[in-house]
Amino acid sequence: MPSAKTKVRVTVSENGPYMVTGDVPLAKQTIVADAEGGSEAWREGEAIPHRAAYALCRCGASRTKPFCDGSHARVGFAGAETAGRNAFRDQAKVLDGPALQLADTESLCAFGRFCDPNGQVWGQVEKTDDPAVRAMFIRQVNDCPSGRLVAWDKASGRPIERALPVSIGLVEDPEQQCSGPLWLRGGIPVVAADGFEYEVRNRVTLCRCGASKNKPFCDGAHAAIKFQGS
Image 1 (cartoon, one colour):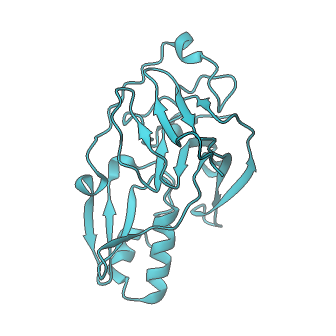
Image 2 (cartoon, one colour):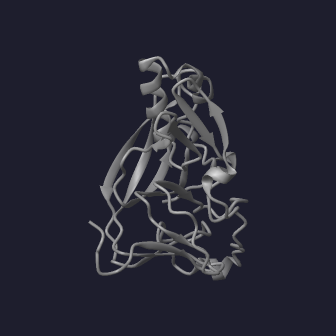
């Protein structure tokens, strides 16, 4: 469990690493593919030893990944944050279905591809009055690590979010033969280098390859460059 003595948070340092406080658990999270190569499930690896406060590489060049070794200074990493700072709902497009809605902020896509199987979630939302489709839709949307996709219950007006432990996952994507982003789970606050506090969300992915154009968030660039995180 995270320490109650030190506030859990991830702070982006200017052109440097992510500073993690609060003794946040760290482990690999691997995308498991189905027979057709579609993203089917997550497999959690063993916990990675760490200190109560630690620095995670965000330039992609560290020789001690996932931890920072100072390589950002050696490579001249330019880590300016360019992501929008509005709340998720203010950025999202909303697709309406009979029972549920799908809120989608495409700029946050981390290329996890859990949205694709079974006719894609954008098609499923139109059939969410069918209990089987509804269950499949909720599962696939909640497996989206970045929080690009959120299912909303029209009756209650509330999001349907699976409870996640406060932890950070190091995404691995064998199907794409690359490593993915840092998966922040369970509502970990993210603070920008200038002190701005991003909206706290259940699921967020932060770039760790250094190539995202939506820093600090992942935009799927790791797949294009075949980033190797270990």
